[in-house]
Length: 273
Ligand SMILES: [Zn+2]
Figure 1: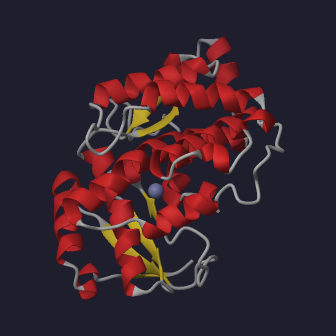
Figure 2 (figure 1 turned 135 degrees about the vertical axis):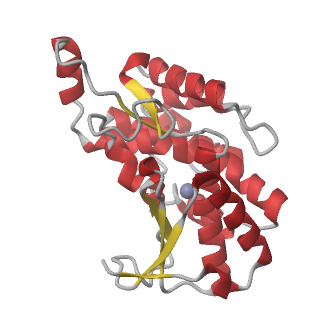
């Protein structure tokens, strides 16, 4: 992948510049780069942008080259919205806590989580929560719509009405997307058949409604209640609260002994493909 620096002011959007300045004031620097030979370049279906480096406090937004101006504005605003929720509102990314080396039970649990589907689930949690807030937030505060994001979400279940996978974490992640659909578009029962979903899906869907159902642009949770809600959600799914921590604001964040696999791909929204 090769990138070149992108001049955001070339888009001539006063609202986007305001959002950019606001976001930078909470982080320091935010880089924006254009991907000139990205894998999805030219695609109208996939995510138009992604952000890396969130946990290092040096985020870079990567933007596909092929977008028109309106979609570039939307895509950058979307990523800045994620960053604002992380750095201004403290709605960080969730990752695994490194086990204490003397605790063999913890070490075993930690190393049994190498399956990729775990990271789909962990990545989907802040993604869905952020989206249920930022779509309204960007529109209300900056007059920037999220038409492309909503189109991707709308199409998400088109060919996947019934659940096929047997992987528990993927079912949990799928339930989060269904929850997001209901929050942003409405009536997910019209695009999926609840009776054909597996139990882990239903369990996660109910839990998301219970813990995140009140979230929105008018009711952004405090950082601490967000963390408790996310941990309660994970607990409902059978996990231990103490196995997780949040980036980048937790005391362990940024230390090399903490691993968060979902970090690099978290904002790619790849689950929307
Ligand atoms: Zn997103």
